[in-house]
Length: 265
Image 1 (tube, rainbow, N blue to C red):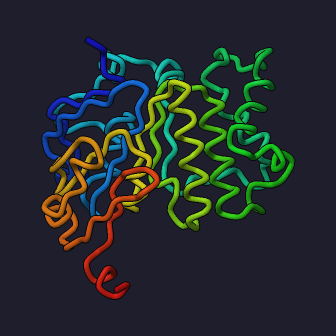
Image 2 (image 1 turned 180 degrees about the vertical axis):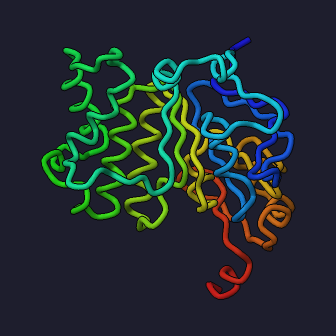
Image 3 (image 1 turned 120 degrees about the vertical axis):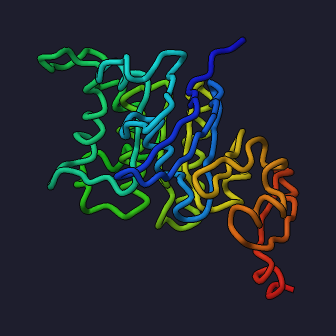
């Protein structure tokens, strides 16, 4: 039996004893792209933080490749698991190449230094995100889509086996959203495990191997898009009536809130 890349066991998370995620059991298969969806305040970002050890559980535990996450030292964990939070902040004036190079820190010794493969890894990460032409530009001068590609390049330069991303497509137009998700899909094809929080249900259905739907801090559905994107689940998680169509190119669901669908006719 294959060991899950990530496993949450009865995981409960909260802030100042206010419970946000309640007793979640979750397994993430290695080499898969899993999308967490749910309404605002459903627990998506909190769950991601708990999986990445950015939050200490109130109860339960997280296993990374079969090992309790609390047993892993910082650099060791960073070589396995990378995290890209919402709206990361770059040091003032830093250029893209230097930002991406910061992703190499888990692979350096305690005294830092430069590894012989650092430049090649950084260049490959820039190429993978179509950001090579941005290498000499300041991060604070980039557009939203360009900046997000730079941050993802930094995460790829870290060379984690597991990558967690919290809403990497927020505030991007549809072209840049698909651009970012295409990059993540390509990394999964190379063997990386990716867990991402998304708001757009149709994009989630299009790109995910597995969809996890949260409501009120609990998982209400998990599985393929076809199994999880149902009227009953969407009503439970989002409080909406939805019309479900099928994308003729992918065979995946397209979710239209009932009011939007009515206007379109």
